[in-house]
Length: 399
Image 1 (cartoon, helix red, strand yellow):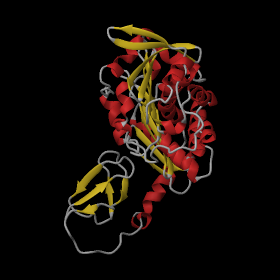
Image 2 (cartoon, rainbow, N blue to C red):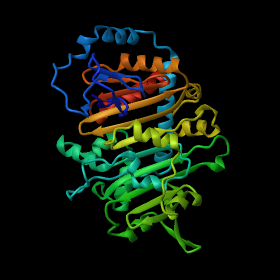
Image 3 (spheres, helix red, strand yellow):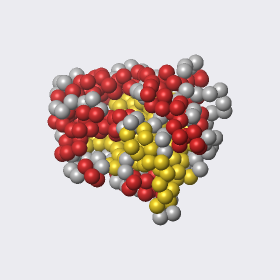
Image 4 (cartoon, rainbow, N blue to C red):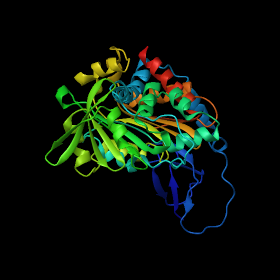
């Protein structure tokens, strides 16, 4: 009798012709083995409970231990760092050039504590076509987690890596965390021509601004009407941006006028297929804070060295980027978990990154997986611990 199962590591669903005698199944996508907890599609007699995985396969734990003890070559950090540094590039551009997040909360009704699945965020439709770095934040789950743990959301976000200056900027604009539905930022890092660099930040609110004039005044907005479209030149973090109102609840900031086109043309998502696939299949559906860097030869992109400097990175990290192609990381809050997927340049590097994860990330509830060039780490912990772990991996890669 067929059994419907879902891989706990990459969320891939598939059907087995019958219950495996071992009580475990192997995912056809990521290659990981896991206990079968699927739904039998036809009624069958109840059987004895499946034995714990380690009981059925006493060699599995041994094999993982042996893999964890292997020498971690420099390529391990290289493969991991590429994707995460790629993510850092996007974050750096947003932060250094005035990217948005949100201010101290008010005791007012907040947004939903349930995160919207990453691919369903409306703001993605306002990003530049071909964006190869995307980051997003949904305040609702953060606010709910902070209330549940008696923490100040502002302090929580700062400790998780959001600059205090970003929160202060939204304070100045008169926007509170509960007002924000989500914020997304997307950048297109070109191979060579810096004139092709694209960057947009979409601020999507739960309700229209109560004081739009204050918002525009604080941005020193200068109205520009062209071809029936109303745009604004604004000042943010001492730099000039373009701004448009995509709808009553969505405002989009662009590095150039061209970056506003998607917002003014209906807001249809134009993410590359590979990046969309990563967001849909690698990230948890309830990830409230996430970032992704699409597959690319990052070290060969001329703008990357400049962006690494903005991010506080090192020039010798260009060698690091040679060993990686893509990465995606997401943080959930109910319960708090951090999931990281890294796509390395080859299967050998992928195996070393998995071994590195197994060695460095220990404790209850930690899962390490992936196959071929992909390596996955899924670990519980509060947001501060999770981001500290990521920083530790990057520090190792920098060595």
